[in-house]
Length: 488
Ligand code: SF4
View 1 (cartoon, rainbow, N blue to C red):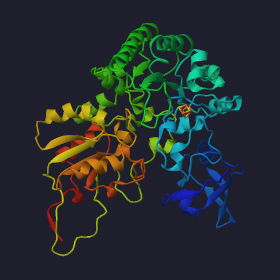
View 2 (view 1 turned 60 degrees about the vertical axis):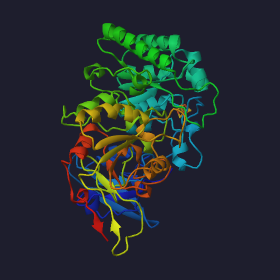
View 3 (view 1 turned 135 degrees about the horizontal axis):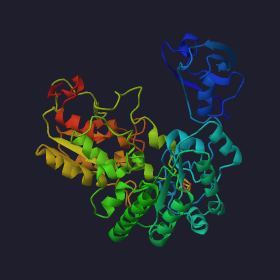
View 4 (view 1 turned 30 degrees about the horizontal axis):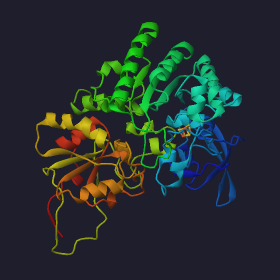
């Protein structure tokens, strides 16, 4: 158990007025020790708050009176103050087992904690869920939750999770639905294991036993070059097409019985199967957009200017990495302390090169310079046709092959600095290089490097069609964007 440590205080907030400082540790709130940020928020909601803090190891008592509903104005260091509940499964397809060595420690954490499911949209298998957890979820209305299903047949689920509790833990899913908790499900499909007849059986099982599920995404497994599981492999085109067909067939069944599609195939499947994406209305409001379902369609609508707002926080195709750490999903993509906010305004990074000597000519991209959009293999296939619609010969898509993770890794969210460096070294100077922010977490790539380490200046753009369109059309020019040839 570690007390929540204050990392930021909002100026003018009740916390600031009460003299709370960055570095203070919150020991109790109205006499209770908060164990996670959910409980912290409930306690902080009180109008009258007695806080016991420690500051530099010394106790400090603070009384706060605030208006009903007024936010306390503190940001704390972590979502969980007690131990994160780790996963006791050993899935063959787990991407965490397939990570290269030497990454930051938090990336290797296998969490299976319903609280992170509620807070960040992480998927939980419920194999460690308890009666007390159910009581808390129901009492505090921790909804929606995200549950990894993979298969409804007990023996198949046990085999997939390599955990005997996999056979029984979906009873908790039934209990959650019985208590009107909204749940989104996920099926990671491994060819030869839970596709074909098993997938049909799983979708029939969902219709039969869990029809209240809000939505279910069907996503292909990721296979990196570090995969050590002999049975894990990429889908063939035919296998991917069979999954897409199965999902469409079952959508018809779900619609006939429940009046809604419920199950959706991830965008990756349409790319793998070489099929066109469903029309936007077939996604029924994009309930699993963050999980890579319908992102290509929303991007297209945004890029063409058919909508005014981006669809949700686009965490990219990255979210199919089942059980990846929360920080990889929804952490701020750029470091808020040093960088401009993302959104329509691109953030410009220059390589960390020494300052030019007097008289040295330094080429900086101009707004009119040719533009290269950096993206992964899948992104290139989505963006290529859209960019072609512009009819501009000064805009191109540059595909960044993923050698860092290797295997079938093609999502933009897993682009890293080493691959970008390899590609950018061969690219001309003086062009604008646009980088989607989905590959950054707090300003860093997964390999620990940052955009400033790249051999060409890049502009980080929010990962949605509106932001890319604005970056290409230059509608949101800022002083930073207006760059010319500079004589140092
Ligand atoms: S895929 Fe998820 S549930 Fe399976 S071992 Fe990895 S973290 Fe655990």
